[in-house]
Image 1 (spheres, rainbow, N blue to C red):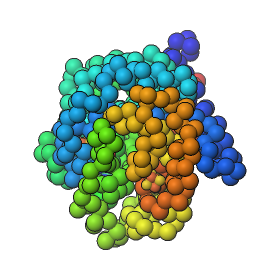
Image 2 (cartoon, helix red, strand yellow; image 1 turned 135 degrees about the vertical axis):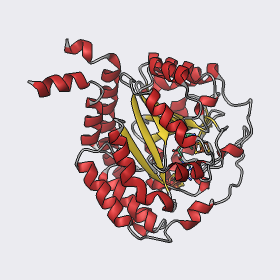
Image 3 (cartoon, rainbow, N blue to C red; image 1 turned 90 degrees about the vertical axis):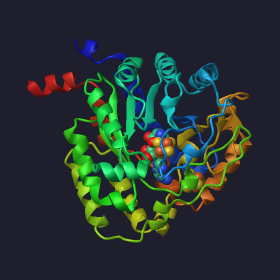
Image 4 (cartoon, helix red, strand yellow; image 1 turned 120 degrees about the vertical axis):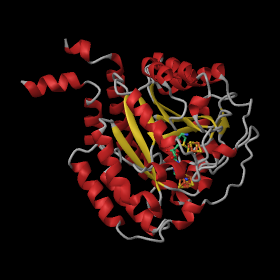
Length: 385
Ligand SMILES: C[S@@+](CC[C@H](N)C(=O)[O-])C[C@H]1O[C@@H](n2cnc3c(N)ncnc32)[C@H](O)[C@@H]1O
Ligand code: SF4
Ligand code: SF4
C-alpha cells in the first residue's frame, strides 16, 4: 500500500535530498584543503530559457532584451540535459528567464527532464498560465512551480512588476492549481523597502492558501541579472531606483525578521533558513555590511548556470567558462578557466552572495518537512494511529 503512495517522483526527490546532504558536508571539508577545485559535481543546474519577458519589472531589465533566434531550441536543450544527466546522474533543474513560458516548448522540456529522473522547478510571472496550461503543467511531472509575488497589496505588487493586472494573474494561477497532485507550488518574493512591512503577511498568505513555501530574496543591483547576446556581450543596465533606496530607512526591519524567524520555528512554510533570514536583515539595513562580505559565495561549487545560448557562467558577472553546444559539462566544470574563476569568486567583494542561489544553506529540518508534504497520505496514516 505504502509502496503505491510513495510514487517514483518522491523517491527521486528523496534521493536527491540525500545527495545534497553529502555534497554539503563534502564541500565543507574539501573547501578547507583546495577551494579552487570543486570535488563533487554540482546538483543545481539553472537554465535561463530565454531573456525575453512580457512584464516590465523595475527591478530587472530583462524585458529590454530583443527576441533572439540564436537561443537554444528544444532539440539542443534535450542534448544538453542528456549530457548533464550522463555526467551528474539525478540533479535539480531550475528553469527561469525572462519568462520561461514564453517559449512554447517548455512543457516538452519538463517532460523530457522528468523521464530522465531529474527534478524540475520553473520560476514564472504567472501571466501566461491559463486553465489549459495549468493542467499541462501538472501532468508534465513538474516538481515545483515558483510564482513571483512581492506583496499582498495589489497596487504595491503591480507597481513593482510594471503591470496593473499581475497580482490578479498570480491569484488566478493559485486558484487553478489548488489540485496539483505531488507538485509543489511556492511563492518568490523580492524584497525592497516598500514591501518589508508586508513580509509577515506574505508568510501568512502562503500558509492560508495551502501553498508549499515562500522564498524571500533581497533586491540586488540590476547588474546581477545581466543580459547577454549570442556573442556573450553584455549590456550596461541602470542601477535601478529601488536599489538606491535600500538601507535608507531601517525602521522596523529587525522586528519583521525576528517575527519571520519565529514563524519559521512555528512551522510556517518559509523556505529560507533562519540564518539566511538574519543575514538578509543585515543586508537590508546596509547592503555592504562587512559581515555579509565575509561570507563565502557558494556559486562555484553549488550551481551550474546556463544562459539561453548554452554558455556556462558560474558567476553571471564573469566570462563564460564554456559552451554546451561544443563541450561536455564535466570538461567545462573541471577546466582551468573554472578553477581561475573559483579563485576570483573567493576574492569577490559583492553582496549577491546572499541570494538564495549563492548562499550556503542546509536547512535539513525544513527539507524533510517539505519532502513529507509529497506523500501526505503516509504521514496522515501515521498520525491517525
Ligand atoms: C528574473 S525572474 C525570472 C522568472 C520570472 N520571470 C519571474 O519573474 O518569476 C526570477 C526572480 O528574480 C526576481 N528579481 C527581479 N529583479 C531582482 C533583483 N534586482 N534582485 C533580486 N531578485 C530579483 C524576480 O522577482 C523573480 O522572483
Ligand atoms: S523579474 Fe521576471 S517578470 Fe520581471 S522583468 Fe524580470 S524576468 Fe520579467
Ligand atoms: S558574490 Fe561575487 S562571485 Fe558570488 S555571485 Fe556575486 S558577483 Fe559572483
